[in-house]
Length: 547
Image (cartoon, rainbow, N blue to C red; front, side, top):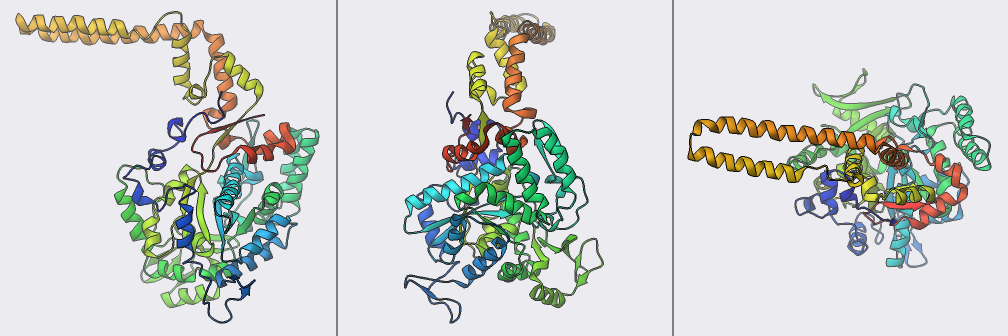
């Protein structure tokens, strides 16, 4: 069974919009800037320079480095923020070097973003980050005069706690039950001791189990909030690969975004531009709908929409309100209290990072495709959009089972009902599709219709009724025959469904269901290096990795 067996487009797991994007259909091309090829990064680099200028900076905003590169004010603020955040943890030399490189005008980032899912959440958290790391490696080979830094943008300002407070391990859901009303990154980790106690019972006492327990304890019990815990976790897993983890819930970073926040509040450009794009998208499913103001007002225990009503800017579900002048004054004093929603967050990212590309899942890329006209309007370079890698992890034993059952990966990616029907027909000793009989029946009734047209046309209705009745009867017989064959082949079909359920838990993609701990428990320290070695960042095929 091949390791890159089925394309995203043929897998059945991506929307028509993403399939057409990957196929570069003409009607989708206006929704993006450059398609993700190594060659297209050359012009992307040249264009991004305009947003992060290095020469001729005003006095005090730049300084020479080795007479070749200069500090840029945007870069200096970014580096200062990262250095402050990394002061809390033991970073690798590769990561610290990448942070320093961000001061240089020939350094660019590749970014992925993810929520602060408990203990990393589903497996695709790993695949996103590895896609990002591996792309920087490929770009470094293609463009040796530049530097490329992988960025994990932590979604610390989200407030959908119910989406991140759990993970699944060996089919069991482990959930952290507590209240959360503000940005999740600021949420206290207090109370996770009991969670670890329960989870530890499932892990057992092997060497790999003890490593996982220690990792959880060090991340969540030794850090006071979810942002710091997640940074520690991601740094432990990927620090040796030079990953830089950014928490953009930062006053100095937000200060760089003030001009865009002002435009959003006063002109509401995103609302008009994104709605124009949605109108042009035709029958594609809309991933996100813009609001008139795509900003939240946040404090430690508050994250509520800013709405404009009766001439005032009001904070939804509170008594807080501002005039325009008061709101702009609040923005200047406390930019950290203004938080972008899903429409504005991509712009915030591209405004503060020297970023070339964003790597995300199908749903993420779908909403990015709604934003290009908005980026054009505010004169910020639109990044190259890359659908993250998707992986199925399998054991040698599972592959041997698949071979013994004559299953291909195309078979296993089918919906289970379709798979069972198809395999029943293949395993049956005789044909049960009855298509030949149906064709004969149609020919017989065609002759009868010709006969009635030559005699008494009053028989035409009776002939038509008989045709419908006998066709339906044949379909019913086909269903009963298929059902009978399923009973006869129950043993083989049971083994087929059991294998598919192992590889596609809950009849879904493994990467959306399982947590990495399940596979670390079996494979230990070889898990991440093998993933890094085999994942190809610009591939649009599912990758099968065997342990």
